[in-house]
Amino acid sequence: MDLQNWMDKAYELIVDFGPKVLAAIAIWIIGSWIIKTLIKGIRKTMDIREFDPSLQKFLLNLIGWLLKIILIVVVLGTVGIETTSFAAILAAAGLAIGLALQGSLANFAGGVLLMIFKPIKIGDFIEAQGQSGTVKEIEIFTTKLTTPDNKEVIIPNGSLSNGNIVNYTTEDLRRVDITFGVGYDSNIKQTKDVILDVINTNEFALKDPAPAINVSELADSSINFFTRVWVKKENYWAVKFDLIERTKEAFDAAGIEIPYPHTVEIQKKG
Image (cartoon, rainbow, N blue to C red):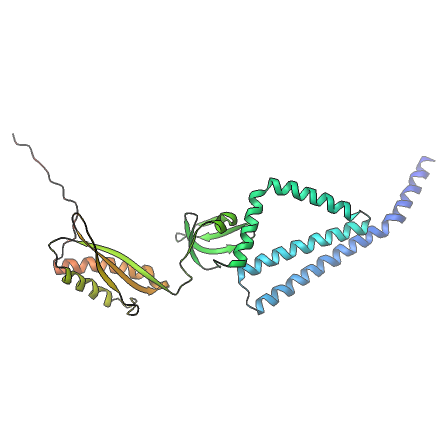
């Protein structure tokens, strides 16, 4: 008799909930396919309209998660679970999780700000939070940089969006600033001419804006010449290293001394 009662109850449950469960499974499968298709369509549209790659990935992730949450709510409602109660539980859980993950939410908000105002984009060389590197990826919570020595640096978006960012890639031109110090016996005009000759023989140094060479300081042991040369951003380091090396060689050839500390040895006799 007990077995019969159990079978009757099982049959009732199957009759009552079976169609709902099957419907929920069907909705989940169809909904997942629809979401995947929508994401593909949105990605193609973004590609056609040439959306920024970092913004594209961020928006696709965000849209995907929102659609999945809506699908879960629909599936639960189909099974018979009160979605209003579920929404209240979800809101309470969201509040508790939000309080526990304030840092993560700040990083999420920072990611949104980076996407909206676009101070950086993938491929930019930046300096931020004490790190320098090329932007490799901008995710929802973090931004990845690749340093010049090929290390990966991960910076939280909250810190990145609230701190100072130096973007070396935004402008097409950069200025190379170098200070050369020469001895007080050196002739100022001759020194300027030597530096200018080195600049003019560099193929990447721009004539417009014109380079500038000025006496910037009469230091304790040297006359300092502040040298400014404009270059295209991709030639910055090549020009800087070349000017330093060849100016030293040109000073040596012209007999212009670069001061340096001298050590005097006192020998004891006897």
